[in-house]
Length: 76
Image (cartoon, rainbow, N blue to C red; front, side):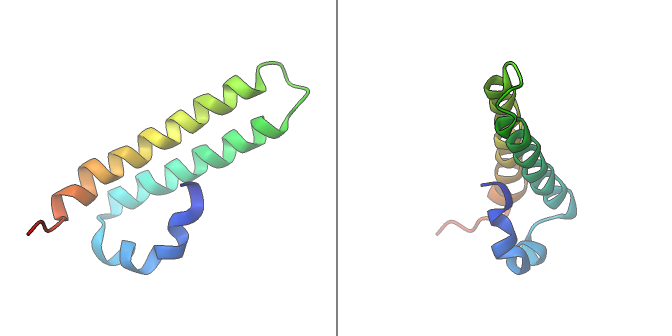
């Protein structure tokens, strides 16, 4: 999750549409921004704000899989 997709960047660039990569990068950015709020221990509701960003990142990654990965998957 998050930036782990960087480890597989070459296969992603070869198979996923550019729009899908934008969603993937957006999801990673949402996780990263959420981590900043999570680390802000003195901020009220920081944990709830972190959860909102994690939810956003998860939704972005779901969209990538559902809209850009599943249609190109080969099922025998």
